[in-house]
Amino acid sequence: MTSIPKILGILNVTPDSFSDGGRLPDAAAAIEAGIAMHRAGAAMVDVGGESTRPGAAPVPLDEERRRVLPVIEGLVAAGVPVSIDTMKAAVMRAALAAGAAMLNDVSALTADPESAAVAAAASVPVVLMHLRGTPATMQAHARYADPAAEVRAELEARIAAAEAAGIARARLIADPGIGFAKGPEHNLAILRRLEAFQALGLPLMLGASRKSLIPAIAGPAPPDARLPGSLALALRGAEAGVAWLRVHDVPETAQALAVWAACRP
Ligand code: HH2
Image 1 (cartoon, rainbow, N blue to C red):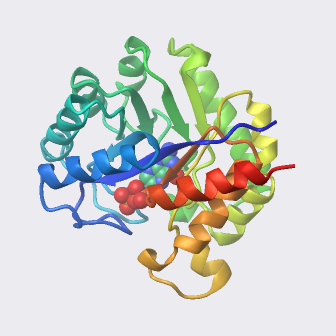
Image 2: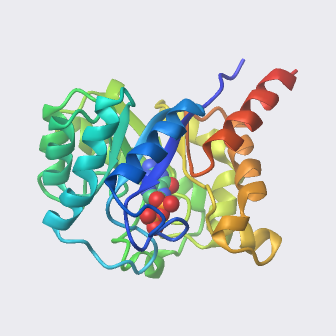
């Protein structure tokens, strides 16, 4: 029987994230929000200090560190497992030193030439997400003949590169990168064939929460009105056997997963 996916709660300490940017005024509020997510069922909380939405401006290293480190320290002190969502090796290094228990890199260790070495020297799980180009340029690369097959092949190449850099396969998690270098039709093609990504032989992560795929399918809705679509996508991920769901709405997703799991044949 497929197991229940673990929840990775999204904690963006950014002024400009697409759905929750600017919501948390300071580190104390962010820590409180992360603790609440953990209590509500998030196995881990994903702290990010740089928005990756299409066209987002890069954040200088010092500023990104300044945003995420106090939050990671506070959550770790409170016993909350933390993942760091960054493309910068120096932020990974500082987050690991502060007690981060997972690395989540939307560039799959390609954005910073030192990231693979930092990940190799660590002992924590590493999420390799599919994207083409950079968040600033990625939508220009959204051209596919067979999105699911191409994304899977490109993830395979990133997995091989990570292993070649000395990161044990047992530490890797693969993520198709919904919304990254993909239009709505590409995202849908991937979601319809999500089971095929199991052939990668790694635990999978799905991050579809509140993404623009939802209004593209179901009609206009601002990010904070996309909970129903987000839950539908979470259950699609659960059905396909993903190991992790990266979500904004933790208690709601935990409830949906519990009910889904109890009703499975
Ligand atoms: N999506 C976002 C950021 N990080 N990491 C993984 N592994 N998978 C994802 O799908 C993913 C991710 C984008 O969402 P969000 O953090 O809500 O927004 P922003 O990047 O604007 O902060």
